[in-house]
Length: 89
Image 1 (tube, rainbow, N blue to C red):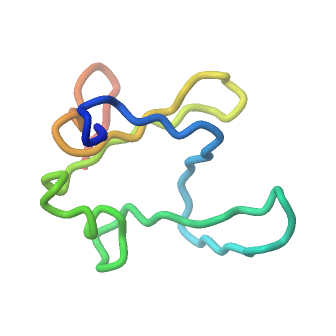
Image 2 (tube, rainbow, N blue to C red):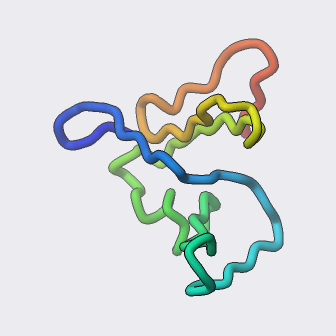
């Protein structure tokens, strides 16, 4: 996603993962999670709320937490999925 100035936006110290039965406990110390973002098609998901501003497109590439490599979460026109071993739905 680009900022209003046209530059890429980076969010350091954000953990992104996948799950099917997610819960969250707020306000339990400094290391507690602070939220869950939904990427599904439901009315409360981030994708639905961003809607036409991202042309309802997003892509992600999640790397192992220990890899010291940056995972990617892209929205809109930069959410292109291509290359060997890529899966899209």
